[in-house]
Amino acid sequence: MDLIPSFSIDHTAIIPGIFISRQDTAGDSVLTTYDIRLTRPNREPAIDPAAMHSLEHIIATYLRNDPDWKEDIIYWGPMGCLTGFYLILKGSRAPQEIHDLMEQAFRSVASSEIVPGATPTNCGNYLMHSLPMAKWHASAFADYLAKNKGRMEIYAYPQTERLITEDGRHFFDS
Image (cartoon, rainbow, N blue to C red; front, side, top):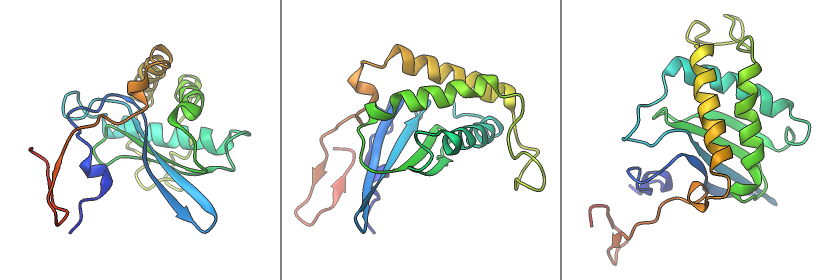
């Protein structure tokens, strides 16, 4: 079975940032999946599931209502490892081109007084939210993005040499 591309990234070397995870073609369209990484995997604690859930609701609502971006938003959702989110957009943009959108989206959490859609009618686990912790994580990440905007390391996955055999097998401990 082939290892999917996102599992071939050295997660011990990823820092918080905005990375292109993959690009797919659908007809004449390109869909770009971005890895919006809030914490350093395996070196910093994962984000609490309740805070992650609240961030998902608030930022998805923000993105799908942004007049300049809403037509290009396909998906916003948490990573299973709870260290970041995936954002899927129509088109092909460098991570630097969505920096301001991500910073603004995370800053929007500070002014949230409620978590949109956190009712039994609208959410499958409406009791699992933490607005205070969502605000804390969002503020920390927005500040990080502002401080590091000019650093290329926050836009490109770390590269490592990997031994690949003639039949295409990867050795990840090489």
